[in-house]
Image 1: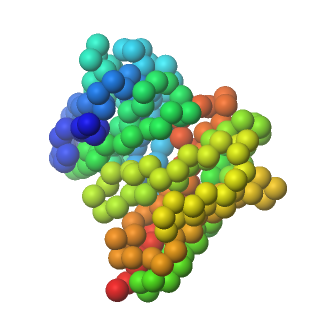
Image 2: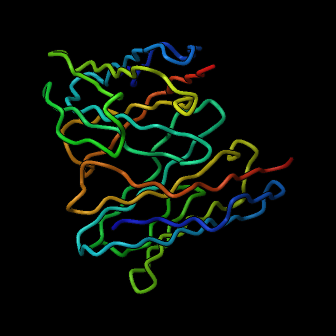
Image 3: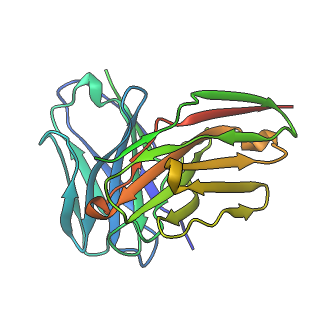
Length: 114
Length: 115
């Protein structure tokens, strides 16, 4: 079974630009969660999508958004990039919503904002 | 509020030594899950274990073992006879019933195993 895939793996953007990251969950998984990892703040929950609906959202500004498609693939978008958005963005997929099921993480997308 | 504390920032050991990673958690809920993840240099978080709050049995999986003590709110992780491949950042995480959609991670402990 293929694992969680994220594209692109690396990205360099300029302040003020926007970016879209993609996550393909494990086949059969319907829940996708996104996390941001930075040296200063550690791993923080961004949002969760289940059956094309955003079910939960962390404490991030509205510049961070996402969506999920009918095949469970998910994208997250960050608009008006700031230097502080430089981070490793990880997505995790799970069979269903809630961490009572194992969450499998992808390799991440490393975003650098200059 | 949920909180996970991993007091050890970095641990360095020589191969074959045992290493224990501490994890202390805070939650007001009686139903919660505790996790350990490993993050090797490649960046991917690798799931190691999930334990629910009603199961206090210790667990052993190969060279890995976990000690869950509700009385001290701790969920410690021991690697026995460490190997160079164990070098990674290890995260403890918590999810409680009101927030069961997300993991709250500790700051992580970097383990370096020297040959």
